Image (cartoon, rainbow, N blue to C red; front, side):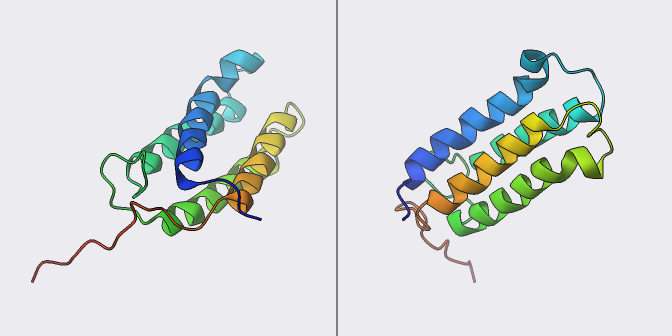
Length: 123
């Protein structure tokens, strides 16, 4: 059941992006890879949200379905980062929980946006 509209999804995109950027300070993490991956993924989430063709997009060049695909890649990186980047001995719970939540948001999101119309190609 897809209960999250593209507008709600957009709100969550920006909220999660900001949360990821500030998570290292909020969680008292050090300055290592465990923090950098959160900050960079937060910046990336806000960046591609700004480019998405949905109600809260600014430039609107990325189709919403493409955005959802990037969300899946984003969630996979976030979820696996403690083990792939070698900091699982220090911290892994926030990365895993936030990544799994992101998978859940994608699963619950509608696959279309009323704003997402094809951009005509110039000839």
